[in-house]
Image (cartoon, rainbow, N blue to C red; front, side, top):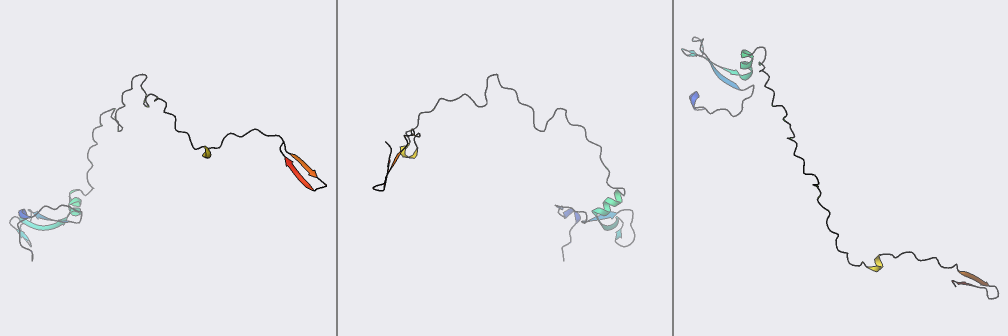
Length: 133
């Protein structure tokens, strides 16, 4: 069984939900079960407190004042730079020429078209000759 404590000695709750129970003392009832000269002690949920205090629902507060005009979520626009300023900067100097590549890996230009070949057939020997001059 839990040890008896005074209410003033209890810890505060870290979280409160609508179904949590609260202890109340009704000072208008001083006779009957669970009553004393200081009032009747009962338990109640947060929903019951809300319904008892606000039977038509929670009241709505007044609309807040309008914020300062001209304020922007993205912030103020920056100042323009001086004429001639460039975001990319000036063009740098030309770099040095690279080393000569491997000649076998780079094909050279196409050569000139040569003369057409000469084809000769010797019927007596049954030979075919092809020459480029």
